[in-house]
Length: 97
Length: 97
DNA sequence: CGGAATCCGGGTCGATACTG
DNA sequence: CAGTATCGACCCGGATTCCG
Image 1 (cartoon, rainbow over the protein chains, first blue to last red):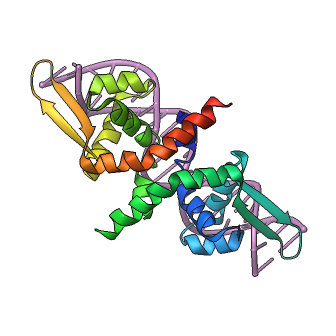
Image 2 (cartoon, chains in turn blue, purple, yellow, red):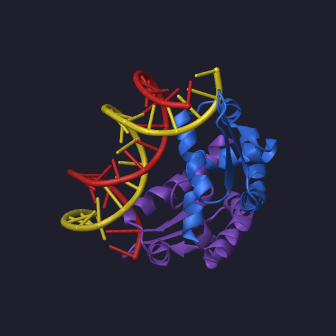
Image 3 (cartoon, rainbow over the protein chains, first blue to last red):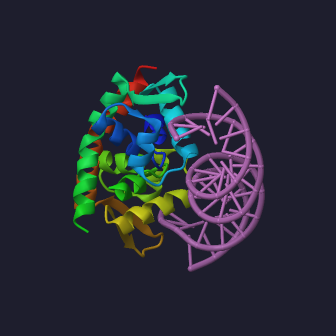
């Protein structure tokens, strides 16, 4: 059980999942802009990691400019569902500070 | 919302909370043994961090030998409650591998 | 132009040894 | 028993560069 917990522990992981959950599939650039202060490198890393965990998918179209879309897999949806109470709590706590 | 998520993102944080949730208050050594592979330094760090977040309390008795007990505050109980679905999911996924 | 790879500095993690 | 001290190794994250 350690593993899942540690894996989603990455700084941005839950945050990224949150946006994919909220907005559905997104292109790389959209995701980047929504999140705000994240470098392309870090975002790529996290996305690849989550892809290898099987919680998000990556759809690549080799057009020019290229178009890469990310979204939640079924497994990922399960996960974000389990994370929902946590998101809500986070919102509540941060609001009252 | 970033903050809470990022803070509990620390490698062991959720894991420690899990044990405190499951067993109630625990002494430092007990916690350490239950978790297994964690150094005293890191455990101390995490505990102090969570204490400063107000999600766990630290009860110190200056006997010889000293006795230090950690447990969840109300805020901490709220948090572990929100984490429960995640714990369950983690157990399920790891079991089926 | 969108997206990814490289390189590099700072900070965290963690093993070991030691103290009150 | 419950921590601190110390000190590497490693990882994370940012800037820059590259590719289609």
